[in-house]
Length: 389
Image (cartoon, rainbow, N blue to C red):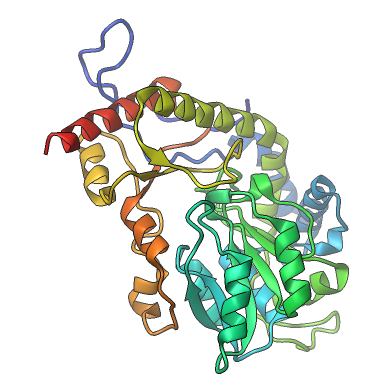
């Protein structure tokens, strides 16, 4: 498997029968391909003298992505980050000045992209089972709102979970409101549809190239508009004809992307093996927890669980004392982020509950299976301590 070797994890003294009594388990270690896998491509970029502006390495990377998805290369647009990609996609498909409906349960990058595209975030709650927006609820909110003009809906794929594409395509058909998918962690579930979707290639993702992302447009025409938006809105004559920004993916990262595609199946298999190890260990432990629908057999970059009680902050602190790094992935929800508290927000009790209960556990291609057993044993131990309080 051509991935970077993982730095040695610290194992405390006192191991019994070869099983470590304590580990230091990082939250994430990137699974980028080893340098020698993409070194030759980097040398080709350097020798070519073309480093950006839709060069041959980017075109090759987009073509490889398109081939994997079974779509026209015109529909796949490499971008400098998923946030920039979502911004450009909104610039291409949504009218300025309206509201952009999105879940409060998301990363702050989602409302940031909407703001950059001239839209006002409007936070709604998510479904308890899927941790996603519900199309029926969204449609009802739109129909009841007399003052708000909804320019777009951004559906978030939480932690890369699958979404119900047919339901959201039908929603877009009925309402005429563009639907975009923020699938930042969803490279493994990325699929062709009539919805514009964005994935991230950040180093912390299962499929990473360091920094970058890609947009999958629903058709060639939209793909061309998004591509212009990534180049300051300029057409082939270098005349700005649409709103845009500088969001192009450069040649060096495109070269790493091609190498990452070569190693992806090995990385994916390793992540899935570790995800299943969590599943088995957690169910064997008898711990009470919840996972969102649609994350089965998905290779992503964290193992999220919702605890039985609002103990996320305490649990993360207790895990850290045992050498295990975990995270409240989206904090208290975007509706509580200072820069977004003025945005319209309906009651979001599910988001509030998830914010208090969800933690992301270490999951990456090189985390040892024994370390996963240790993480779960720590969760059991901490859980017993809570029971006796």
